[in-house]
Every structure is written in structure tokens, then in C-alpha cells.
Image (cartoon, rainbow, N blue to C red; front, side):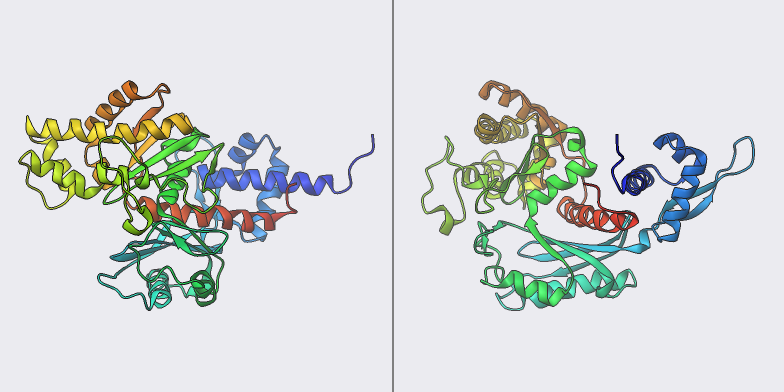
Length: 395
């Protein structure tokens, strides 16, 4: 049988990528350990590391110690070969971070934007990016990619933001083009809850799940839907905008786009949860604080938690009936304030309301889940681009 031309190069590229992925997930590693993990001989592993070091993709990182025999040279991914930025945008602030290729966060910046006008959106985004890059000692030009998370979703047919009327300055018809031109590096913009799901998928509870839903509960209710390992965004970017879902237990909301509310939002959004707590005599300034107080209050607190769990389960039952996920991740400050106790109550209630019985878990990403997802999204694409420079594309 004739061999396919270029096969040795293709095998080298496949071995290089396998080694890079191992160094990324388990490094630093020695030549021997890397050879054992990849199944390569010592000479081949040595050639591979030399090739990757010459390309600037890996670098020496100390030696093994405390073992019999001579110390072995360790190698790690050269994180400084590429940097990415992630942004989490809300109506009151823009939070930005810069990470190197390994995912190590090297710079952060937060820009408060209370009461902002619809003007100056591009300038604010650039300021946040440059602030995070500056803290890392980098210029904006060193970034390989920027990923931005916002409420709502950008309609792929029009390029305009939908489902987020509360975010001033983000609805201009050519905003994405203006942002891309001003930032001058590859840009991706994604729904914030979708990015929280990306973080969960890459470094959280959903790493081994192809089909899952992330339910987000803060001032607003939202969801991200992952099917066969891929985010499902819908025809207009509105998949997961479950705040507009009509549900029993609340009056039917009409003209939901203009009102920016719907049945699930009126049932389990931040303001209804705060009202629920006050009806039971619990005092708090925010819904998140109200749930925290409920956990510490016997009687009235129990009633609040039970009712909140019921409301969440009602919405989840509708989602489960359509999507049938294997896992539901509960996220967002108001929901996570209830901890494992609330999770258990929701799980029990959902079992009574839905035929499928997905596993429910509280998010594993406790800090900045949207920002973490933005960085993970940017890193995934950038790693593919950078790592593929070690050899021809794998077809």
C-alpha cells in the first residue's frame, strides 16, 4: 500500500499538539514523563521538545528533585508567547482581565459605569482593556484576542444586541464593527450566561458532560444551553433567554421585549425574591443578602427557601421538558447564596415536576464566572492558532 505524502509531518504535528495539551493540563513535565504519557520513545520525545522550544512554545522550567538518580529537566508551556483579554459588561461596570496562554491572569481592571449615557461605549471598552493590559505591563497590541460578555445576545443576521434593553450604549447598529476597529485585534462577543457555561465546561462541573443547562440567577434570570458539547444560541441569539418564559404562578406578561421581563423573571428574578423575603419579615437590601439571611433564620427563612426552590423548579421543569439535559448547573449570586441546601430543595421539587431527572450541581466557578468564561473562550481559539504553528493543520 502506498504511503500518503506528508504523513510523517502530519504525525509530528499530531504528536506536538498532544504534547502541548499535556504540558498545558499537567505540566511542567520531564522528557521521560512526556514520553510515557504520549507513548513516544525517548529520542522522539527529545526531538519533539527541541522542536517546540525552538518555536518558542515551550521553555525549561527547573528540574525534578527529591528522587533517586540525576535530576531531570522539566518543560512548561511558554505562556508569554500570547495574551488574551476578557471582559464582563453590566449596566454598572465593566470588568476586564488579561491572561497569558496558560490561563494565568496577569492583569485586572474594573471601570465603574453607573448612570452612563448611550455614548462613549467604545471608549469605555478600550479603556477597560488598556487598564487590564497596563496592569500586566503590556500594550494592547500584545493581545491576540478579546472576548466580551454582555447581557442579551447579538443577532447574527443584524449584528445588533437583543434581549437587553437595560444596557445603554450597546444597541447601535454598527457597534460590533466600531469595537473591532477600535480594539484592532480579533474580537468575539457572547452572551454573559453562555460564557459562564463555557467556564463550567472548561474548568468546572460540566467538563465531562455533552448536554447540560446552566441556570443563572441574579437580578435577572437566564440560562445557557449546551447540546452535544456546543453552545446553542438560536436563530437570533436568544436561546436561553428564559426570563421571558411564561410560567404558572405569575400573571402573563405581554410585550416582553419592551418590558424586558416575563414570567420566570417575575417569579424568580432578584426583585421578586427580595419581595418574597420581606413578605416573611426578613430584612435585606438585596436578593442575594435575603437568601443568605433566610439560611440563618428558622421558620420564616425556611418558608422563603422552600418557595424560592419551588419557583426555580417550575422554570427548570419547562426547560427540562424541552432540552432533557444530563446536568443542570445552578449559578449566579442569588442562587448560589442558598448553597447546598437550596440545591437540594430544587432537586427534590424538580423531581416532582419533571419526568427527566438531571443531576443538579452548584457552580464550581465561585469568582467572576462570566469573566472566566470570556478568558476561556478567547484562550481556546488562541491556543488552536498558536499551537498549530508547530506543524501543519490536523485534518
